[in-house]
Image (tube, rainbow, N blue to C red; front, side, top):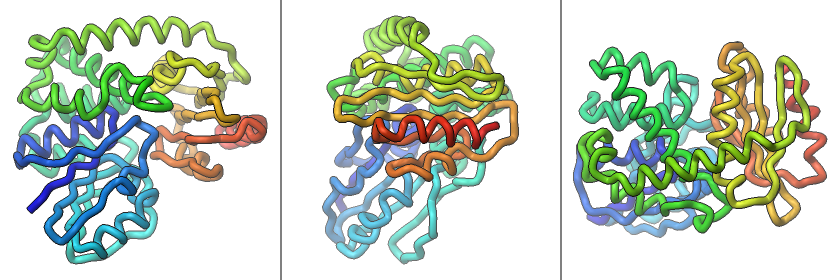
Length: 321
């Protein structure tokens, strides 16, 4: 049997795979990319000798390639928390998907699947997806100290920060390289103690980029919604996701959007619903636009044409009013 691991390049995807492989160790071909590269199954070819594990990319966005790979004879197991769409039944397809809960990420789904054997990595995944309250609660229940949870929170944020970019050249570390550095450690706390170069590199980069982001202009701002604009710069592409998470945590009663300019007359949009308000899910708004998707609490649009920026802002304001 030949194995292929397909995973989102963010903290959730990486930490979900770490847990899975620590429970079921095997040599596998790695397929990943920047956080926004979610159509990863298009890069995979298979035969009946292939088993494919997919983590933290939308089932709905990869539907055609799932059908193609099943037709090629592959077996697939699928772990995710993004919008699934119409379920698919197939004898060689196993799905572990929860797209209804706003407090679950893929790392927590894998954690449930394996009985919490590598709980610290699941917490890093959740912190990376800005699920701070659920992660903190589960961490305390699991016996972690406040100091340890703070360290896990920072690591999750930094791994997630490393995943944002228009291309792999924007990132400090290729996600598959980062995964291979992290995977040998049973605990992320051990990784932070022993592999200080990666942690310190991301810590420095994050602090420099976030300082620049805080000087960026608002296109719209009210008590219930805010839209920030970032120019077409490498640092802006890196920081967009973690900056909007910081805004969401700082102003939990407000919805946020960060629009990042690209070099091809499009923009990348990140959306966060208010943390303290029960409102419409963020992914429902994002899916009104081509290349939009995500999950209930956090969503985005990969390529919004610049001519549609005003249309998006009006829709955003109305949706979260």
